Image 1 (cartoon, rainbow, N blue to C red):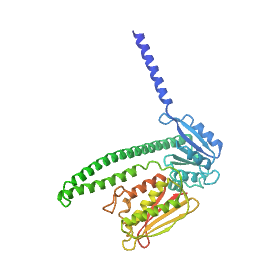
Image 2 (image 1 turned 180 degrees about the vertical axis):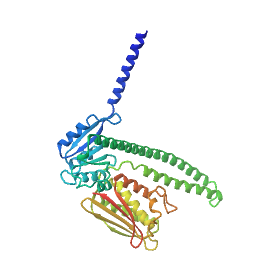
Image 3 (image 1 turned 90 degrees about the vertical axis):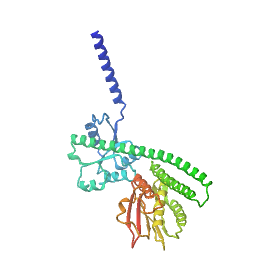
Image 4 (image 1 turned 45 degrees about the vertical axis):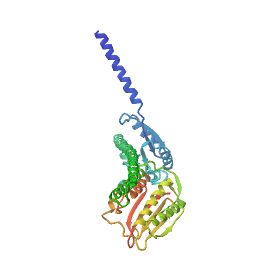
Length: 384
């Protein structure tokens, strides 16, 4: 009996080891991009990190020998977790340019970047850390095996956490869409029954007024739900080529219609230029439309004026939208992009929140300043 039990225990242990080994094999490795113009650095990095593992996952290496080659890889492969990036390659600042383009042109905010340089004077550490979104910065002469292991671990942990945050954001957006759908169904029912009940009462009766209030508040609630749905539906800021000239002309036409609904005869000063930007056309139009509608509403009541000006250089397109209204109070500046924050009692307060969501999704730059002599100026910078 004892021999049988021992054999059974041994067999169970053997089965468990097989199961554990199988589960480890199913884990995908972390993908690491090595960017350096020296083949020996690639070989050394692979050798040092060859047996490295984090959370049971090994490393899968991809090599690029120039900044342009690295950008080509990153444009196609969004599964790269860490980039080990040399600073001096085809130019003295090639690595810095790659790091900047990863965040702006490729719009990848998740991948972690570790800069390595053999010439630290060309890229001072303080300036690089301040100006660029990187995870670590090392001089090659100081980067021992232990330090490289530690730096990779820190970068992978950060990448893992950022991915979880992004997954939670997507889940929250899906929840918001579901809740909005349920609320919309209920408001439609409430409005429908309120309208049916209205037929049974005199137009000027108290009950009819109450029912009109119910209908109006249901309509406002639907506007809130629609705005939240629109905000939550912005899930993919896809990289597409969009010619902005016609898009801006269409948005200006839509804004003029909006101004007419407010009873404002706005003087539009428009200066457009042609450029192709990295954006979905519908999202680009949405951002400009919301900024223009905001400018129209807050423009001067007596002689309203709104300006839309476009400037283009070799890499960037700057769009400036300004009005001649009272401007944004300094006390309100920190909150203007918050959901439901508005100075207009009849508004929902989601327009600038939607703008911020798209701007952050594309890693564009949006700044607000005071106009001269008054008014507000929104300056949007978009990569060509």
